[in-house]
Image (cartoon, rainbow, N blue to C red):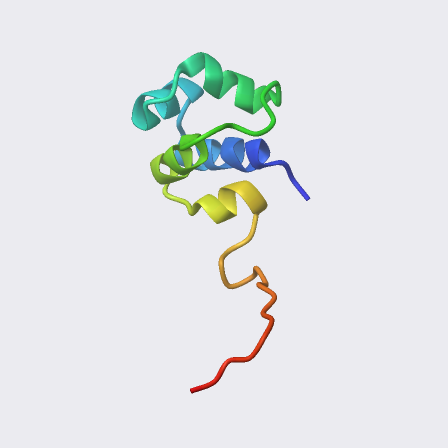
Length: 82
C-alpha cells in the first residue's frame, strides 16, 4: 500500500499544484509540506491531514489510508435491537 505522502503528491500532480501552492491553500508551513512529501515526517499531528485533504479536495480517510469510507470495514459487536 502506498504511503499517504505518495497520495498527496499524486493529487498535487493531478491538480498541477506545487508544494508551495498546497502550503498556501492549507495554511501549513511549506517546509513541513516538503518534509511530509519526503517522508521525513511520517505521521503529522493534529489537524494537518484534514487540512491537507480539504485543500486537495479529497477525504482524510483516502489521504491517510488510500480507501473510501465504503471500502473500510468496521467490526461490530454486541446486540442491536429495538
